[in-house]
Amino acid sequence: MNATFHVQNRIGDLLTSAANGATFERRNPADRDDVVSIAPESDGDDVAAAVVAARDALAAWRRTTPTVRADLLTKASRILADRAPSIAAEMVREEGKPTADATMEVSRTPKNLELYAGEAYRLTGTTFPSDDTPLVYSTRDPVGVVAVITPWNFPLNLASRKIGPALAAGNTVVFKPSPMTPLMGERLAAAFVDAGLPPGVLNVVHGTAAGAHLVADQGVDAVTFTGSNATGQKIHAAIGIGRRVQLELGGKNPIVVLADADLDAAAAVVARSSFSLSGQACTGAGRILVDRAIHDALVDKVVGLANAYVVGPGAKAGVTIGPLIDPAAVAAMERWVATAIADGARVVCGGAPATDDELARGSFFPPTVLVDVEPGTPLATEEVFGPVIGFERVDGLADAIESANAVRYGLSAAICTRDMSAAQRFASEIQAGMVRVNRPTVGAAFNAPFGGVKQSGTGTHKEQLGPTVMDFYTVSRTVWLGT
Ligand code: NAD
Image 1 (cartoon, protein in one colour):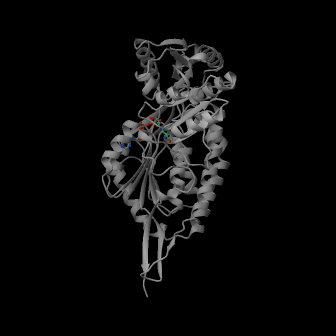
Image 2 (cartoon, helix red, strand yellow):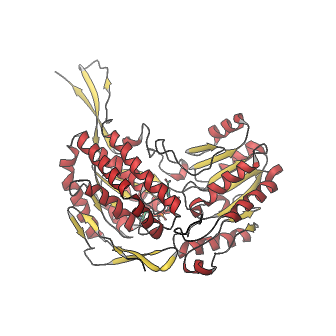
Image 3 (cartoon, protein in one colour):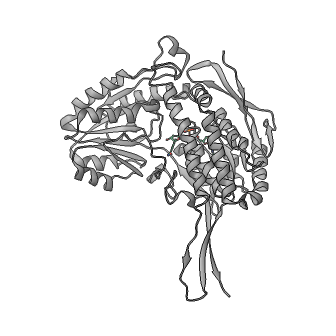
């Protein structure tokens, strides 16, 4: 049996339990008997202590030179890279994704930090011509204490996209990892601390209720959040005016396949977008809008690819689809399928939990394809966050765009076509923050802006790199310098 990791909060220079002594367990989603981590179930007192520690550390950290901050991020990046093999194995055990996917995430995270290290040197201002004084200029200062609240599906990568720029700009941080992945949160924080980050600059509180306490704490100046729409709505309502919030939320990401598309390539785009990470990616595709003329042929090809996925524990060689995050997610997939059938759809592959042999010990659900999905029904409009997708028939590009836009989300969208003018029209008319032509909806260039429109996020500050990334983590001040 594997060892259980005892994770603690990091508050100032202390590694601590929750003040009330409460803990929670995280079990391996591929094997419910394997307790991977036990972490503090923090309450308001723990959160308040972490925010005080972050405020206390702010004055000194914001005055550090760019080189001090850049060197620290670079060193943390190298520590993470050195530890990558063991962290990847732990990620497979705690979060569930297959080893190849965990390895990719663990290798991408240090690169994020390298890039953000450079941002410490690029916090430039502007000068403005003025009739009034010889010099008007703007500077960029840190926002203050930043709360970083993250989901479980990319426990290192997403958190690094927030902690990295926050620290590079001179902010201090209180980090609240997902209760599904406390060990991954600790591994990321430990890399910064082991790199020499001063106490209190990065604090970590674990638990379920801790997120709401953190958002409510008026010692927090800005909240950067990635997660579900339901939680995002609560945070948005709680933040009030005078504090900053960045929300990166869910999606109902469409793939449009036009009649002229290369069908084998389109089927591969659909399968990869829909079933990678067991469909547990915010950019995963859920709606496949196919021109009527090629609908049945494309469904056949996608079903062929779906049936070729190997469902199993992420640590097992050859597995291409790991478990869902927990038993509740499996129950949710069963409900999605039942509701879609009640709404008139038909299952053409998958449709029920995978429970053969060792799979009975975990939370497994196979790639599932439904056809004849009615526009406007829940499967056509709401995020599933699992490997259950629905096909809808459309008549050409205009119909596809109208149908694709008829949802409240706007994160990622793809089109498969050989017609580049159709692709360009799609790219300009689709309501999505990220558009792919003949490429899967999933994946990201880590040096290109990432984020959604409509209810997929606040959309005001995109993540990753690009000209706007540091805007969220800095406040601009305009100075009129008289003589
Ligand atoms: P979630 O909203 O349940 O939880 C996210 C985080 O918020 C967790 O740390 C959780 O403990 C915390 N939290 C819960 N209630 C809170 C509250 N009231 N106040 C503050 N914090 C609170 O989401 P999840 O299940 O962890 O992640 C899946 C969701 O994340 C999906 O909807 C997915 O689309 C979305 N996601 C979006 C992106 C993106 O970049 N747009 C990326 C990954 C995941």
